[in-house]
Figure 1 (cartoon, rainbow, N blue to C red):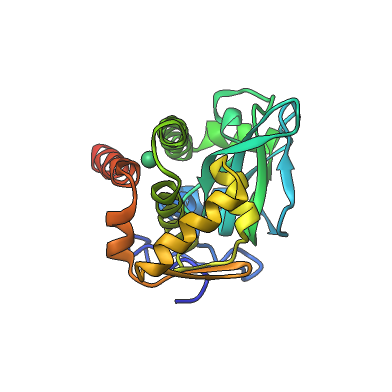
Figure 2 (cartoon, rainbow, N blue to C red):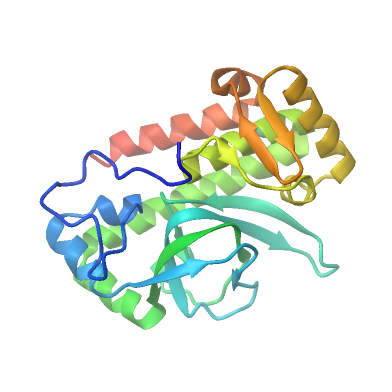
Length: 254
Ligand SMILES: [Zn+2]
C-alpha cells in the first residue's frame, strides 16, 4: 500500500476530497466534520509540506499555528535540559499538532517534529480560535483528539517503564503503521532508539528478534511489517489497550 492514508468511508461523497487548490484531504478530523463546517474550516487552512526532522514547535515556544496532519508522521517528544528526549505521542492523518490551543493555551510543553516527511493543513492560532467559536463540532473533535493524545502519553510512559524493548518496538511499529497507512516505515535504528528511550544496540537486538520471527524485515533506514497479526501478538498489551480505548471513545461520540 502506498505511503498515504485513505479517505474514511463515512466522508460524504458530495464534499470535495480536496481543498480549493486541489490538495487531497486525508485528515480524519477534517473529513469527519459536517459539510458546512468542513468547507468553513478548509477555507481557512494552508496546505504545507513537512520535511523529515522539521520541528513544528519546541518546549516553551508560543504556538503560532495548529497542524491537521495529512500524510507522514509527527512525533511528540518530552525534552530534558541535557538534550535527551523521549517520545510521548505519535500523530498521523488521524490527528492534530497544537492541542493546547484548543483549551486557549499558547505555550508548547513538548517538541513536535516530523519523523516521516508528509503534508499538513496549517491554521494560525488566532484564526483557529475564531473558527472554534464558529464550529462547535470542530471544537468537540479536537477536544476528543486531545484526550486521545493524553491517553497515548499515559500508556507510553507506563510502557517505557515496564515493558521489554522488543515488545515496545512492536508496539511502536504498529502505531506508526496505523498513522501513516502503510506497512513500510522508513526510519533508522538510531531514530528508533531515541523514540523508545533506549540505546541503539538494544534496538538492533530487538529488531533482530522480530526479524528472525518473520514479523518484519529491517535494513538500513527501513522497516517493513511482514506479518501484522503476529506483530500484534509480539507487542506488549499497550497497543491493544490503546486501540480498545480509541474504539470505545469512537462509539461514545456517535
Ligand atoms: Zn507496553
